[in-house]
Image (cartoon, rainbow, N blue to C red; front, side):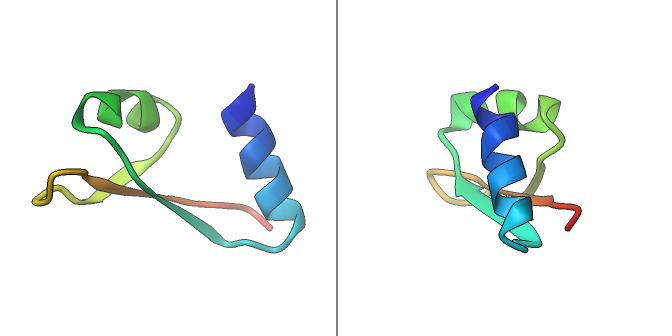
Length: 53
């Protein structure tokens, strides 16, 4: 619910894309919510999600 609220808020403010530096063990959580890994080399992978505006 928290992530859905964040995405809705961001979309309402015309944000087109979200980025997050995630803990390695949280990557599956984000992927299940539609996020995509864009950088996996560092200590904390970077994921992104395109939003509908």
